[in-house]
Image (cartoon, rainbow over all chains, first blue to last red; front, side, top):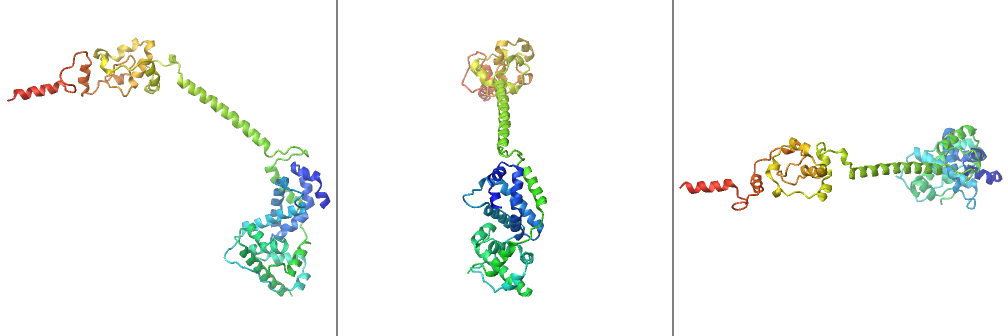
Length: 179
Length: 207
Protein backbone atom coordinates (compact mmCIF):
# COMPACT_ATOMS: atom_id res chain seq x y z
CA UNK A 1 0.00 0.00 0.00
CA UNK A 2 2.81 2.36 0.91
CA UNK A 3 4.35 2.01 -2.53
CA UNK A 4 1.04 2.79 -4.18
CA UNK A 5 0.13 5.84 -2.12
CA UNK A 6 3.52 7.36 -2.64
CA UNK A 7 2.82 7.30 -6.30
CA UNK A 8 3.54 10.81 -7.42
CA UNK A 9 0.85 10.70 -10.06
CA UNK A 10 -1.88 10.00 -7.50
CA UNK A 11 -0.75 12.83 -5.28
CA UNK A 12 -0.39 15.22 -8.17
CA UNK A 13 -3.82 14.20 -9.41
CA UNK A 14 -5.30 14.94 -5.99
CA UNK A 15 -3.58 18.32 -5.95
CA UNK A 16 -5.04 19.01 -9.38
CA UNK A 17 -8.51 18.16 -8.05
CA UNK A 18 -8.79 15.12 -10.27
CA UNK A 19 -11.68 12.98 -9.00
CA UNK A 20 -10.17 9.73 -10.26
CA UNK A 21 -6.96 10.31 -8.34
CA UNK A 22 -8.90 11.37 -5.27
CA UNK A 23 -11.03 8.24 -5.35
CA UNK A 24 -7.95 6.09 -5.81
CA UNK A 25 -6.32 7.61 -2.76
CA UNK A 26 -9.56 7.24 -0.79
CA UNK A 27 -9.93 3.59 -1.64
CA UNK A 28 -6.34 2.85 -0.77
CA UNK A 29 -6.72 4.42 2.66
CA UNK A 30 -10.35 3.52 3.37
CA UNK A 31 -9.78 0.61 5.78
CA UNK A 32 -6.91 2.26 7.56
CA UNK A 33 -8.84 5.50 8.07
CA UNK A 34 -12.11 3.76 8.90
CA UNK A 35 -10.49 1.87 11.78
CA UNK A 36 -9.33 5.13 13.27
CA UNK A 37 -12.74 6.69 12.81
CA UNK A 38 -14.48 3.73 14.46
CA UNK A 39 -12.43 4.20 17.63
CA UNK A 40 -13.99 7.60 18.18
CA UNK A 41 -17.49 6.53 17.19
CA UNK A 42 -20.45 4.96 18.86
CA UNK A 43 -21.63 3.34 15.66
CA UNK A 44 -20.96 3.09 11.94
CA UNK A 45 -22.89 6.23 11.14
CA UNK A 46 -20.69 8.26 13.42
CA UNK A 47 -17.64 6.72 11.79
CA UNK A 48 -18.96 7.55 8.32
CA UNK A 49 -19.42 11.17 9.35
CA UNK A 50 -15.91 11.37 10.71
CA UNK A 51 -14.42 9.70 7.65
CA UNK A 52 -16.21 11.84 5.08
CA UNK A 53 -15.27 15.06 6.82
CA UNK A 54 -11.71 13.88 7.27
CA UNK A 55 -11.24 13.02 3.59
CA UNK A 56 -12.66 16.34 2.46
CA UNK A 57 -10.07 17.99 4.68
CA UNK A 58 -7.38 15.71 3.29
CA UNK A 59 -8.18 16.69 -0.29
CA UNK A 60 -8.46 20.36 0.57
CA UNK A 61 -5.10 20.45 2.30
CA UNK A 62 -3.15 17.86 0.37
CA UNK A 63 -0.96 20.61 -1.06
CA UNK A 64 0.44 21.10 2.42
CA UNK A 65 1.58 17.49 2.74
CA UNK A 66 5.37 17.34 2.86
CA UNK A 67 6.80 13.87 2.34
CA UNK A 68 10.09 14.95 3.90
CA UNK A 69 8.35 15.49 7.24
CA UNK A 70 6.62 12.14 7.47
CA UNK A 71 4.72 9.43 5.68
CA UNK A 72 1.36 9.94 4.08
CA UNK A 73 -0.02 7.31 6.49
CA UNK A 74 0.97 9.35 9.52
CA UNK A 75 -0.41 12.53 7.95
CA UNK A 76 -3.78 10.95 7.17
CA UNK A 77 -3.95 9.23 10.56
CA UNK A 78 -3.53 12.54 12.34
CA UNK A 79 -6.22 14.23 10.27
CA UNK A 80 -8.72 11.42 10.88
CA UNK A 81 -7.94 11.29 14.61
CA UNK A 82 -8.31 15.05 14.90
CA UNK A 83 -11.63 14.83 13.12
CA UNK A 84 -12.69 12.11 15.59
CA UNK A 85 -11.80 14.31 18.53
CA UNK A 86 -13.65 17.24 16.98
CA UNK A 87 -16.65 15.00 16.44
CA UNK A 88 -16.80 14.03 20.10
CA UNK A 89 -16.07 17.56 21.19
CA UNK A 90 -18.99 18.85 19.16
CA UNK A 91 -21.48 16.62 20.92
CA UNK A 92 -20.04 16.62 24.42
CA UNK A 93 -19.33 19.44 26.80
CA UNK A 94 -16.08 18.71 28.56
CA UNK A 95 -16.15 19.35 32.28
CA UNK A 96 -13.29 21.32 33.79
CA UNK A 97 -14.42 20.63 37.33
CA UNK A 98 -12.04 17.80 38.15
CA UNK A 99 -8.32 17.70 37.59
CA UNK A 100 -5.64 15.21 38.51
CA UNK A 101 -1.89 15.48 38.78
CA UNK A 102 -1.28 11.79 38.20
CA UNK A 103 -3.40 9.01 36.82
CA UNK A 104 -3.87 5.93 38.99
CA UNK A 105 -3.30 2.58 37.34
CA UNK A 106 -5.84 0.15 38.70
CA UNK A 107 -4.97 -3.52 38.13
CA UNK A 108 -6.73 -4.90 35.09
CA UNK A 109 -7.09 -8.53 34.16
CA UNK A 110 -5.11 -8.56 30.95
CA UNK A 111 -5.89 -12.22 30.40
CA UNK A 112 -9.60 -11.49 30.16
CA UNK A 113 -8.84 -8.72 27.71
CA UNK A 114 -6.82 -11.02 25.51
CA UNK A 115 -9.77 -13.38 25.26
CA UNK A 116 -11.97 -10.63 23.88
CA UNK A 117 -12.23 -9.79 20.23
CA UNK A 118 -11.73 -6.33 18.76
CA UNK A 119 -15.47 -5.79 18.35
CA UNK A 120 -16.14 -6.65 21.99
CA UNK A 121 -13.41 -4.30 23.16
CA UNK A 122 -14.84 -1.60 20.96
CA UNK A 123 -18.28 -2.09 22.50
CA UNK A 124 -16.71 -1.81 25.91
CA UNK A 125 -14.99 1.44 25.06
CA UNK A 126 -18.15 2.81 23.47
CA UNK A 127 -19.84 2.53 26.85
CA UNK A 128 -17.58 5.22 28.24
CA UNK A 129 -18.93 8.75 28.44
CA UNK A 130 -17.97 10.56 25.21
CA UNK A 131 -15.34 12.82 26.77
CA UNK A 132 -13.74 9.94 28.65
CA UNK A 133 -13.97 7.83 25.52
CA UNK A 134 -12.13 10.47 23.50
CA UNK A 135 -9.34 10.89 26.02
CA UNK A 136 -8.86 7.15 26.46
CA UNK A 137 -8.63 6.43 22.73
CA UNK A 138 -6.40 9.41 22.07
CA UNK A 139 -4.04 8.50 24.87
CA UNK A 140 -4.07 4.69 25.02
CA UNK A 141 -4.65 3.84 21.38
CA UNK A 142 -3.45 6.76 19.25
CA UNK A 143 -0.50 7.65 21.42
CA UNK A 144 -1.19 11.32 22.12
CA UNK A 145 0.16 12.73 25.37
CA UNK A 146 -1.98 14.70 27.79
CA UNK A 147 -0.71 18.03 26.60
CA UNK A 148 -1.70 17.28 23.01
CA UNK A 149 -5.09 16.00 24.12
CA UNK A 150 -5.65 19.07 26.25
CA UNK A 151 -4.93 21.33 23.30
CA UNK A 152 -7.11 19.31 20.93
CA UNK A 153 -10.09 19.20 23.26
CA UNK A 154 -9.66 22.62 24.81
CA UNK A 155 -9.27 21.29 28.34
CA UNK A 156 -6.48 21.26 30.90
CA UNK A 157 -3.94 18.50 31.21
CA UNK A 158 -5.31 17.69 34.68
CA UNK A 159 -8.77 17.19 33.24
CA UNK A 160 -7.37 14.93 30.56
CA UNK A 161 -5.68 12.85 33.26
CA UNK A 162 -8.89 12.67 35.22
CA UNK A 163 -10.76 11.33 32.17
CA UNK A 164 -8.06 8.71 31.62
CA UNK A 165 -8.32 7.67 35.27
CA UNK A 166 -12.09 7.33 34.96
CA UNK A 167 -11.69 5.21 31.83
CA UNK A 168 -9.24 2.88 33.55
CA UNK A 169 -11.52 2.42 36.55
CA UNK A 170 -14.47 1.69 34.30
CA UNK A 171 -12.55 -0.84 32.22
CA UNK A 172 -11.25 -2.53 35.36
CA UNK A 173 -14.80 -2.98 36.60
CA UNK A 174 -16.07 -4.21 33.28
CA UNK A 175 -13.22 -6.68 32.79
CA UNK A 176 -13.65 -7.94 36.36
CA UNK A 177 -17.27 -8.66 35.53
CA UNK A 178 -16.25 -10.35 32.31
CA UNK A 179 -13.98 -12.69 34.23
CA UNK B 1 3.45 7.30 36.28
CA UNK B 2 1.29 8.15 33.28
CA UNK B 3 2.64 5.38 31.12
CA UNK B 4 0.72 2.98 28.92
CA UNK B 5 -0.43 -0.04 30.86
CA UNK B 6 -0.11 -3.54 29.40
CA UNK B 7 -3.85 -3.84 28.86
CA UNK B 8 -3.90 -0.54 26.97
CA UNK B 9 -1.23 -1.88 24.66
CA UNK B 10 -3.35 -4.98 24.18
CA UNK B 11 -6.40 -2.86 23.40
CA UNK B 12 -4.47 -0.85 20.83
CA UNK B 13 -3.26 -4.01 19.14
CA UNK B 14 -6.72 -5.54 19.09
CA UNK B 15 -8.33 -2.40 17.69
CA UNK B 16 -5.83 -2.51 14.86
CA UNK B 17 -7.65 -5.58 13.59
CA UNK B 18 -11.13 -4.17 13.89
CA UNK B 19 -13.52 -5.31 11.19
CA UNK B 20 -14.34 -2.43 8.88
CA UNK B 21 -17.91 -2.06 7.59
CA UNK B 22 -18.25 -1.80 3.85
CA UNK B 23 -19.51 1.73 3.52
CA UNK B 24 -16.92 2.57 0.92
CA UNK B 25 -19.21 3.76 -1.89
CA UNK B 26 -21.71 5.52 0.35
CA UNK B 27 -19.01 7.52 2.09
CA UNK B 28 -17.28 8.32 -1.21
CA UNK B 29 -20.54 9.68 -2.55
CA UNK B 30 -20.75 12.05 0.39
CA UNK B 31 -17.14 13.10 -0.07
CA UNK B 32 -17.67 13.64 -3.79
CA UNK B 33 -20.78 15.73 -3.21
CA UNK B 34 -18.94 17.87 -0.74
CA UNK B 35 -15.99 18.30 -3.08
CA UNK B 36 -18.33 19.20 -5.94
CA UNK B 37 -19.78 21.93 -3.81
CA UNK B 38 -16.46 23.35 -2.77
CA UNK B 39 -14.27 22.50 -5.75
CA UNK B 40 -15.79 21.75 -9.14
CA UNK B 41 -14.12 18.68 -10.58
CA UNK B 42 -11.29 19.04 -13.03
CA UNK B 43 -11.36 15.85 -15.06
CA UNK B 44 -8.07 16.54 -16.72
CA UNK B 45 -5.25 15.25 -14.56
CA UNK B 46 -2.48 17.75 -14.08
CA UNK B 47 -4.72 20.61 -15.10
CA UNK B 48 -4.71 23.86 -13.28
CA UNK B 49 -6.28 24.12 -9.88
CA UNK B 50 -9.48 26.02 -10.41
CA UNK B 51 -10.99 26.54 -7.03
CA UNK B 52 -9.93 30.09 -6.36
CA UNK B 53 -8.18 31.77 -9.27
CA UNK B 54 -11.11 31.98 -11.70
CA UNK B 55 -13.37 33.28 -8.97
CA UNK B 56 -10.98 36.08 -8.15
CA UNK B 57 -10.59 37.03 -11.78
CA UNK B 58 -14.32 37.15 -12.42
CA UNK B 59 -14.99 39.04 -9.23
CA UNK B 60 -12.28 41.55 -10.04
CA UNK B 61 -13.57 42.03 -13.58
CA UNK B 62 -17.13 42.51 -12.43
CA UNK B 63 -16.15 44.90 -9.70
CA UNK B 64 -13.88 46.86 -12.04
CA UNK B 65 -16.61 47.23 -14.64
CA UNK B 66 -19.08 48.34 -12.04
CA UNK B 67 -16.61 50.86 -10.61
CA UNK B 68 -15.92 52.34 -14.05
CA UNK B 69 -19.63 52.72 -14.77
CA UNK B 70 -20.23 54.40 -11.44
CA UNK B 71 -17.26 56.73 -11.98
CA UNK B 72 -18.49 57.77 -15.44
CA UNK B 73 -22.02 58.42 -14.20
CA UNK B 74 -20.74 60.41 -11.24
CA UNK B 75 -18.44 62.50 -13.45
CA UNK B 76 -21.20 63.27 -15.91
CA UNK B 77 -23.52 64.22 -13.09
CA UNK B 78 -20.97 66.58 -11.54
CA UNK B 79 -20.13 68.18 -14.90
CA UNK B 80 -23.78 68.63 -15.70
CA UNK B 81 -24.41 70.22 -12.37
CA UNK B 82 -21.47 72.62 -12.59
CA UNK B 83 -22.16 73.74 -16.17
CA UNK B 84 -25.88 73.71 -16.81
CA UNK B 85 -27.14 74.80 -20.20
CA UNK B 86 -28.67 78.19 -19.77
CA UNK B 87 -31.14 77.72 -22.54
CA UNK B 88 -32.98 75.16 -20.53
CA UNK B 89 -33.59 77.44 -17.58
CA UNK B 90 -35.62 80.56 -18.07
CA UNK B 91 -35.47 83.03 -15.23
CA UNK B 92 -39.21 83.02 -14.72
CA UNK B 93 -39.37 79.25 -14.55
CA UNK B 94 -36.31 78.61 -12.44
CA UNK B 95 -37.21 77.34 -9.02
CA UNK B 96 -35.70 78.91 -5.96
CA UNK B 97 -33.47 75.98 -5.24
CA UNK B 98 -31.78 76.18 -8.62
CA UNK B 99 -31.28 79.91 -8.22
CA UNK B 100 -29.54 79.34 -4.95
CA UNK B 101 -27.25 76.86 -6.57
CA UNK B 102 -25.98 79.44 -9.03
CA UNK B 103 -25.50 82.15 -6.49
CA UNK B 104 -21.71 81.84 -6.07
CA UNK B 105 -21.14 81.86 -9.80
CA UNK B 106 -23.29 84.92 -10.29
CA UNK B 107 -21.74 86.87 -7.48
CA UNK B 108 -18.39 86.72 -9.20
CA UNK B 109 -19.64 87.82 -12.57
CA UNK B 110 -21.90 90.64 -11.40
CA UNK B 111 -21.47 92.40 -8.08
CA UNK B 112 -24.40 92.44 -5.71
CA UNK B 113 -26.09 95.84 -5.90
CA UNK B 114 -26.08 97.70 -2.67
CA UNK B 115 -29.37 98.57 -1.06
CA UNK B 116 -28.44 102.23 -0.78
CA UNK B 117 -28.23 102.61 -4.52
CA UNK B 118 -31.64 101.17 -5.20
CA UNK B 119 -34.34 103.40 -6.42
CA UNK B 120 -37.81 103.06 -4.89
CA UNK B 121 -39.40 103.43 -8.23
CA UNK B 122 -37.80 100.32 -9.51
CA UNK B 123 -38.66 98.54 -6.32
CA UNK B 124 -42.34 99.24 -6.73
CA UNK B 125 -42.61 97.98 -10.25
CA UNK B 126 -45.01 95.09 -10.49
CA UNK B 127 -43.37 91.84 -11.18
CA UNK B 128 -45.70 90.81 -13.92
CA UNK B 129 -44.84 93.85 -16.00
CA UNK B 130 -41.19 93.05 -15.88
CA UNK B 131 -41.33 89.43 -16.85
CA UNK B 132 -41.36 90.22 -20.51
CA UNK B 133 -38.49 92.61 -20.16
CA UNK B 134 -35.98 90.03 -19.19
CA UNK B 135 -32.63 90.74 -20.75
CA UNK B 136 -30.90 87.54 -21.73
CA UNK B 137 -27.55 88.93 -20.84
CA UNK B 138 -28.77 89.82 -17.40
CA UNK B 139 -30.16 86.48 -16.54
CA UNK B 140 -27.62 85.90 -13.85
CA UNK B 141 -28.49 89.12 -12.12
CA UNK B 142 -32.08 88.13 -12.03
CA UNK B 143 -31.22 84.73 -10.68
CA UNK B 144 -29.19 85.77 -7.71
CA UNK B 145 -31.44 88.47 -6.39
CA UNK B 146 -34.17 86.37 -4.78
CA UNK B 147 -31.70 83.94 -3.48
CA UNK B 148 -29.75 86.55 -1.62
CA UNK B 149 -31.34 85.80 1.68
CA UNK B 150 -28.80 87.87 3.51
CA UNK B 151 -29.74 90.97 1.62
CA UNK B 152 -32.50 93.25 2.84
CA UNK B 153 -36.00 92.85 1.61
CA UNK B 154 -35.60 96.21 -0.01
CA UNK B 155 -33.49 94.55 -2.63
CA UNK B 156 -34.76 95.81 -5.96
CA UNK B 157 -37.23 93.56 -7.57
CA UNK B 158 -35.43 91.90 -10.38
CA UNK B 159 -36.87 91.12 -13.70
CA UNK B 160 -37.60 87.61 -12.74
CA UNK B 161 -38.54 87.75 -9.09
CA UNK B 162 -41.29 85.30 -8.38
CA UNK B 163 -44.56 86.88 -7.29
CA UNK B 164 -44.34 85.59 -3.76
CA UNK B 165 -41.06 87.38 -3.29
CA UNK B 166 -42.48 90.77 -4.30
CA UNK B 167 -44.76 90.98 -1.30
CA UNK B 168 -44.46 94.26 0.60
CA UNK B 169 -41.95 94.14 3.38
CA UNK B 170 -43.14 94.41 6.95
CA UNK B 171 -43.39 97.91 8.28
CA UNK B 172 -40.45 98.51 10.48
CA UNK B 173 -37.27 100.51 10.71
CA UNK B 174 -36.60 99.53 7.16
CA UNK B 175 -38.90 102.24 5.97
CA UNK B 176 -36.57 104.87 7.23
CA UNK B 177 -33.68 103.34 5.51
CA UNK B 178 -35.71 103.07 2.31
CA UNK B 179 -36.41 106.74 2.37
CA UNK B 180 -32.76 107.35 2.78
CA UNK B 181 -32.18 105.56 -0.40
CA UNK B 182 -34.31 107.99 -2.43
CA UNK B 183 -31.41 110.34 -2.88
CA UNK B 184 -32.57 112.99 -0.45
CA UNK B 185 -30.09 114.16 2.05
CA UNK B 186 -30.82 112.54 5.39
CA UNK B 187 -31.82 114.83 8.16
CA UNK B 188 -31.04 114.63 11.85
CA UNK B 189 -29.16 111.81 13.40
CA UNK B 190 -28.84 108.45 11.95
CA UNK B 191 -31.18 105.92 13.47
CA UNK B 192 -33.87 108.46 14.36
CA UNK B 193 -37.12 108.28 12.47
CA UNK B 194 -39.58 110.99 11.59
CA UNK B 195 -41.93 109.71 14.28
CA UNK B 196 -39.30 110.42 16.83
CA UNK B 197 -39.17 114.03 15.78
CA UNK B 198 -42.93 114.34 16.06
CA UNK B 199 -42.87 113.05 19.58
CA UNK B 200 -40.34 115.59 20.57
CA UNK B 201 -42.47 118.39 19.11
CA UNK B 202 -45.53 117.29 21.05
CA UNK B 203 -43.55 117.45 24.23
CA UNK B 204 -42.63 121.05 23.55
CA UNK B 205 -46.22 122.09 22.87
CA UNK B 206 -47.91 120.54 25.90
CA UNK B 207 -46.76 122.88 28.63
